[in-house]
Image (cartoon, rainbow over all chains, first blue to last red; front, side, top):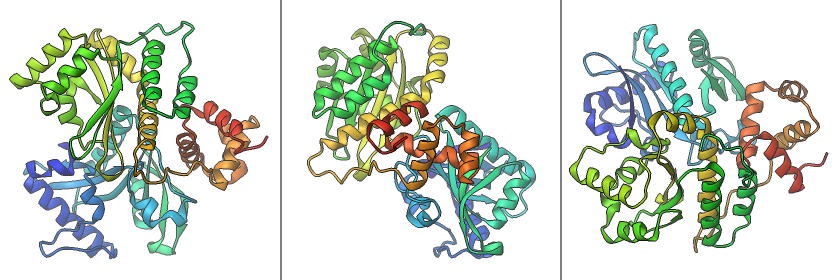
Length: 172
Length: 243
């Protein structure tokens, strides 16, 4: 099932949280080779996880993580503004634009998981008055997203090949 | 509500007056004007900082306001508890009113003229600052759902414009975000002011229409505007674009 959980409420879902941060380590560090830090418990967490983001998480029947993404309002601190401002000509700030980062699927997740997460993104737009999501994706993720009929449109990019970082909007 | 076709002050004008306000009275005036404009019972802006200090303005009665403080309802109010540290707008029906204390609080509120329907926009400002912008009314669920659906985005923007103004009055505030438009935003707003359609603007600037929409969105918020037309008008009156 799809869950919407703020970081401050993750304690209510210990298994889900544990497996999410481990799956993130597996996806971003092991499989994609991103320069992310993994703590001794095997969790991939960064400073933005400490800002009480909203996670949209697909929970498997056994209570473990199947896929997730992380949302923060662009009126506060965001990755796009703090690390990728060279791609977007100045900070993006609006209460109607949220940042979507750490789109993660557990290894071997079925297509329904990504589809459910897309649905979750659409629900956020519909119910929370959000007009746009912005995010940073590398080239592999852009391919994966387009497979799920999510259009990732670049506003700017840097790097080449599989290591291309694109900053752009997601249209669900 | 629902038939807002009378000659009330347009929201654009209310926001521009709010923008010029140099004290809390300006916030108060704006809540009253919004009530009148939308034909709803109450509009409230409520600030709570990380130390539990609070202040607010709005159209609740003085009696209710005093009672809220006196009985320390901040500790019980499901709207505060349910919105604190959140950033998505909340219909009051989605909050947890199940406890005895919460139900008693709600009954007390209603007996003091607070409506049964509410919609609150939480705002997380710098340094743990937290504020709520709330619209409140008495009506049935369907009418309320229709109205909030239609007004949601405007209410979110208005909420943030209130908070920006309130932050200006903080003694040791951090410098406000720049109102200057980026070169791309100036290009986009100028072409829009010249009557280009979004598709034409995107084409002229060689960017996708989605990227253009993000630029417009960002400019709209910088300009304190409600919609694109309002943003273009603001940019022109501030001399940020010349057509």
